[in-house]
Image 1: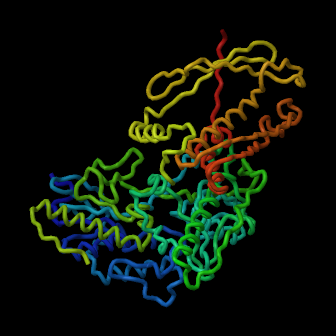
Image 2 (image 1 turned 45 degrees about the vertical axis):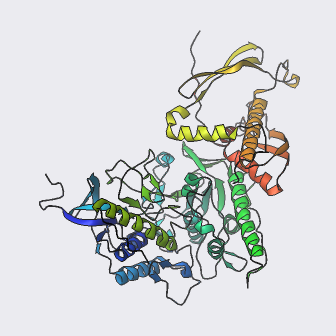
Image 3 (image 1 turned 60 degrees about the vertical axis):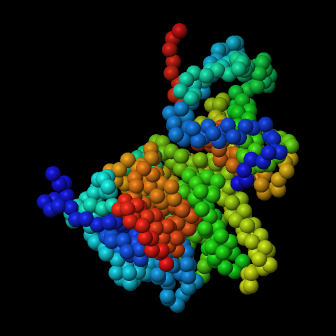
Amino acid sequence: MMSGGHFPAASVDAVIIGAGHSGLAASHCLAELGVEHVVFERGEVANTWRRERWDSLTLLTPNWLATLPGYRYQGDDPDGYMNSTELVRFIEGYAGQAQAPIHAHTMVTAVTPDDPGYRVETTEGAWRTRAVVLANGGFNTPAVPACAAGLPGHIAQFTAHDYRNPGQLPDGGVMVVGASATGLQIADEIHRSGRPVTLAVGEHVRLPRCYRGRDIYWWMCHTGLMDERYDQVDDIVRARNLPSPQLVGTPEQRSLDLNSLTDKGVRLVGRLAAVRDGKALFSGGLRNVCALADLKMNRLLNEIDQWIDAQGGVPGAGDMERYPDTRVEHPPRLGLDLAKDGIKSVLWATGFRPDYAWLKAPVLDRKGFVKHDGGVVTGAPGMYLLGLQFLRTRKSSFIHGAEDDARFISQHLFKHLEAQSGRSAVPSCA
Amino acid sequence: MSTNQVNIDNGVNVQALLDARAALTEMPEAAQFQWRATSEWVNGTHTRSTVEEFFGLGEDQKHKTRFVYDTDHPEVFASEDHGSTPVEFVLVGLSGCLGAGIATVAQNRGIQLHSVKATVEAGMDLQGILGIDSEVRNGFDGIRVNYEIDADASEEEIRALVAQSQKRSAVFDIIANPTDVWVEVSKA
């Protein structure tokens, strides 16, 4: 019996799940290789950026870095940072230019192994395919720690997924949990709305917006750091789980770090460790996570300085700079009586998880992540991943990282199809 | 991070630890350890604790010898001072844990250590344990650790060693984060 409806399943060589920048890049590369495919999108192109992020969000990377296979930023502000509306327009433009075969408003409900490929059930019918590209993104289900359940009922809770702007929050104190780009940007804007903010800080990544006169990503691209491969880094599990660097994209290119928030009056506390009897308890390790982030930032700046020296200098580069260490209140606060302190809402900026409930192939590890080797899914021939942190290189989860990864997995997919059907000619991807 | 260097020796078998890490990633149940101590009151504020067995890698394990520790209080507490105070044992645990971590991380990063000396100080307001002021906590008001390290590395690399050791330290975590403690009683 067909579970996908009354009609027999349609057939296609490859299915791409997700019409964000990664899925569209894959579509472009598969089209270049002549691989017949469809792209299923649960909502509209760039859906996450349209509907699941806060209003003031901007890309962390500058516009000149917004490149996709066969497409790039053409606007008049290469050093600026797109907001989500501009980004949606940018990705829409790509979908239009490529005439990608997108089935919008088509939710994938199951992907099941079905020799020699997969059966893909969607809300618009079932498909048989020989290959699947999972480009649905790893950032769609907010990951909220278990201690959230212990918060008193009168405290409103939001995640970075449902937060839009400070106007949503009740008046009064706000505890923001998480010190990634998301946590710091949101803490900053909530503080500016006049609500006192307490920011719970665990392990984090500190970066200056600009260094020696250029955007930090200019250096990271040119020094080759962005191209560091997944099989070359020391601890890939850690690299894949790092929070996003503390950055914001503003016209004045300001740095957003913990010191700048402290200066404004945001109160820093350690990682939220537990909630007990209406009290939030914070880790006493705040100094150390700050020291680690300072050390790592300085190590990166050292690498940049050494690279500049090795080039014999870089025209226009500014002087070497070092930034003050992160200041931590002495002694840092270890507990907070939420009611007494007037905390009325908690914002969980504690990251996202991918949602693979519909993935009926035995490819998940015990933590619920897809097992893969540089985007080639383990134990599932013809299944691929795209758009996740450090999938193949440090730049994999960035817009400009999609091109190399999409080309690689498209080639791999093409060869897989070809091996299956016993053909041999391999056109090369331009 | 640099890989092991042949001529660096801090006495830590890093390869065995890396192998264990890989094996325990595949077999998380074997990573479940339980640490145990038994103790018996001697007299006054003097208690004698022993450590010998623990559980790990799926079965009961034993130290090479049975370790015995006396805890007591000093004479200013009108005690007989048969051993260090229990709170000093906490400092011993912390410095032991951080020291082990520093040596291991240094070995893994190819840094030769020559000397690692720590001073650990913890303040305490006795008004807490004596019940004089209920707003004063029983425990430390903070712990300050000072490391003096001689190693073939830059100051920044040494700072990074110590920071990484804190990040991976069990005792640092036990002290810095809340832990559920429950005490059961039965009549002998």
